[in-house]
Image 1 (cartoon, rainbow, N blue to C red):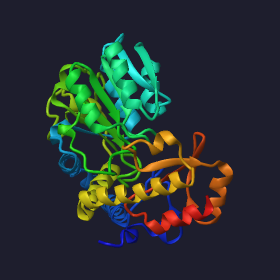
Image 2 (cartoon, rainbow, N blue to C red):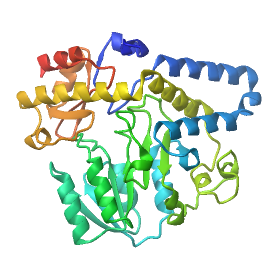
Image 3 (cartoon, one colour):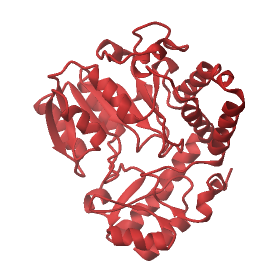
Image 4 (cartoon, rainbow, N blue to C red):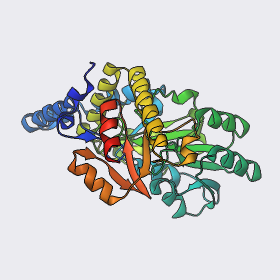
Amino acid sequence: MKNFAKLFPILKQYTYLNTAASGLLSLPVMEWRQEHDLDFLIQGSILKENQAKVLTGVREKVGKLFSCKAKRVALVPNFSYGFNTLIDGITTHKKVLLLEGDYPSVNWPFESRDFDLSYIKITGTVEEEIATAFAKAQPDIFAFSMVQWLSGIKINHEFLKELKSKYPDTLFFADATQYLGTEIFDFDNSAFDVIGGSTYKWMNAGYGNALFLFKESVAERVAPRTTGFNSIQGKYKPQEGSFLGRFEPGHQDTLNYGSLGVAIDVIRQLGVKTIDEKVKTINAKAKEAFAERGLISKEIIDRVDHGSFFNIKGNDQLVARLRNEGIITIARGEGVRVGFHYFNTEEDLNKLLVLV
């Protein structure tokens, strides 16, 4: 499919640069959701008899997409739920390294519990700051967003792998909500012990679904206490007390998780490599144009790694002016956040540049 915009009818009305706030719902996902609820309307509990099969299929699709065995994939309603469940399974008084100003759903759960916290600032040389902090006092846990929600700064994968090899006993926990769906990602070949993310943004899966991926060794070091009857239901969590089941204690929503499964089908149909290349290409052009016009800081310009969105100079008035011209953005931090996904084009970028 060369005309990606056909998947998203909203693109006929707007230039959509706000995926970092809310991803779009594609036609295939919407059509599947309609069929699902129509089936529920006329079948009732008969539909739910297939719940285990649906959820197993989604889990397996997630695992295949991100190179993680299905038995190490948890389906949760949102990142915050899964992350709090994870942290509740950790003995307190652990040393935790956080990034100052990181997404609240990463930092607040630690700050509301009994941990020994330290912070580093997010700068253009954040990797150097992290390495220095590790050398000074190796943390038990390093928790961070893979892509920073305000600036779009992406932590370098190779740096993280080198750091993990040097400090194998430190647990690496990452929020990938602003990352998953933007490029090829091999979890088993990454530095992360645990990575989680809500999938309503760059994966275009709608709301009410998220995923967590775990390395095998995590179950030996983390013991979540959450449980319920559904903790033992399904192919990959057959016994009481199973690690995976701790993240899925209650009734699982086939509508929302099924939507994730269809969203993954769309991703695979388009091609992960194609999406990766298109996202990188449009964002490289955006970065160059923003740099020429002085719309982004030097620390962003000088970095090699960056996410799929930028925070450019502007305010609420600029957001309103862009909206009047049919361009959807959002004010974040000290500027205006604009994001480019695979369905965005150079024409979209040019429309924005005329107005900023």
